[in-house]
Image: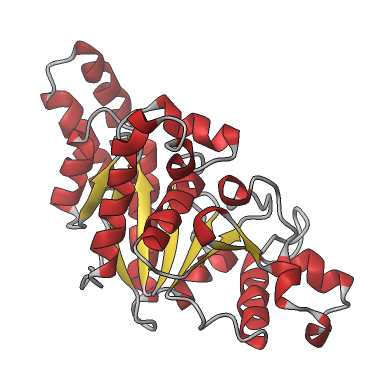
Amino acid sequence: MKLAIYGKGGIGKSTTSCNISIALARRGKRVLQIGCDPKHDSTFTLTGFLIPTIIDTLQMKDYHYEDVWPEDVIYQGYGGVDCVEAGGPPAGAGCGGYVVGETVKLLKELNAFYEYDVILFDVLGDVVCGGFAAPLNYADYCIIVTDNGFDALFAANRIAASIREKSRTHPLRCAGLIGNRTTQRDLIDKYVQACPIPVLEVLPLLEDIRVSRVKGKTLFEMVELEPSLYYVCDFYLNIADQLLTEPEGVIPRELSDRELFSLLSDFYLNAPNSNNQENAEELDFFLV
């Protein structure tokens, strides 16, 4: 099973990805997490340090694939999860998709790409155009991380459009949304009502989830010293269990930008909070 994790920049994809990887490993699966971000910090909470990237290793070897060994690029993280960082091209130059393609090519050369039960691509920001949509070419499922706000759902809607487009030529489906660190889910529910996508889980607004990233530890590692956090791990285990059923998934039918703005505007207009009225008036400006 190959999973691609997408969502708005800063929404918590890497933290979510690392904890899902551990949850899948706890279910007895051999897991490889591939970070697809030039800042190469996807696997930081699994390994505790910034591991060398594929692209840097290839450059050091003058792109002689035969000189690269698995231990040069694959590092074992917490819980037995193997980790790879694709890296990226220099800022303003090169193509992120090329780097992802080279990563997959090298892993195949090393006979590693098909040795895992689950491969998880953690993709930077909300970029789904061009090169950084490349992980969707390899994925069976895309998972979208969002919160209960408009910006994150706007990004989710764009990602849904990308899934639909890629599904024309690839066996790709959307496994569902994950609401991350949010106290409410009313806007998420409003969106999936209009654009039917499963909601895999909604994680609570818990400071320890954010702090785990700073500490370089997954929630599963933190719980060893703070047993009170065990219930949070159950959220990730629930996501893993749903994925391991190999769900049918969906091909989303995204909303147009105007439809999405109208949906949010109506939501605020019908809410009792007076501040929401002001937000709705601002949104209506864009609909004119």
